[in-house]
Length: 385
Image (cartoon, rainbow, N blue to C red):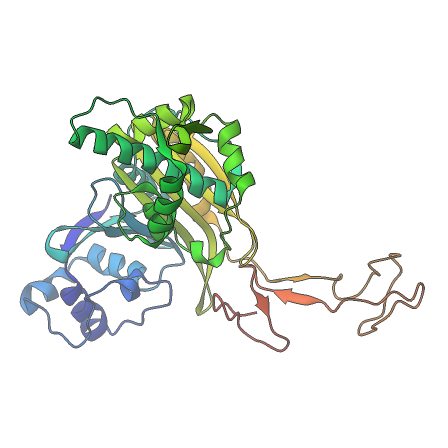
């Protein structure tokens, strides 16, 4: 680490905008932080100006003003206060921007991206050598939402039993209550609960449709997370062995969660390449990576990782570059018939060999959104096409 210093938004605005005359590129984390008001003067102008006498401070500010790569996301969950963390990289080095006290920020400058990421991972995760998974390695987004809600239901039943003076023998919840609290959790912003934390902290989650069906819940039954059952009072959802083990883990040791978004600069636009969610417990750092095009059903890759494993997984992300847009529909464009594979001249609506109609090529941005004919920028992520 080359340099560390603390700064509040007001002083950062004064230094960057008024003293340095900086231009914030769209990837700059300063643009997303509340309190960065360019109209306010520095709290202590003399001491703020003295900061720039250190070339490392100026270097860190330059990286924050115009990073090439940013790995960032909101923090919360468990008993953690809501905040935000950003790792910004450029050819000059890497800067980790993390929350400090009284609304200020802690700035750490590194020459080595791997070392900066190691510090970031240590802030987010539990110090364990490996993880104990409780879900399959890939599952639909809807099944994951059901799983998180099931764990929240387990915690809820245990808490209520404790408040009622009953022993910890939580085994089930009524089906009616499971369903009603699912709807409530979908509307909740209380990230002390796992499902709302996932829905609120995961960047870009609203880009995907969410349509829970019976077969999504069946995956958890097959995994011994939840079991349908009956009782004298009516249908219930029972916590199966795997569900109880995971429920106890999250009840007793869930400390924090964070959303992660990997974004890269693409000229004056921003291209988002990865979206993920991490929940930390004593049994591992549970890493959920969203897979799928915008507007299409989402699959989630899941792994329970140790701290070193998570660092190894994320490190290649920091070398990613902007991806070109691709043509989806016909070949590039209409070079091959979709029916007989014969060559088709550009602009032809029918194949000259078999007469099959040819679908017009659809230009999609690498974020998955469709680009209208003649459009120069993506209407979803803003990158130039």
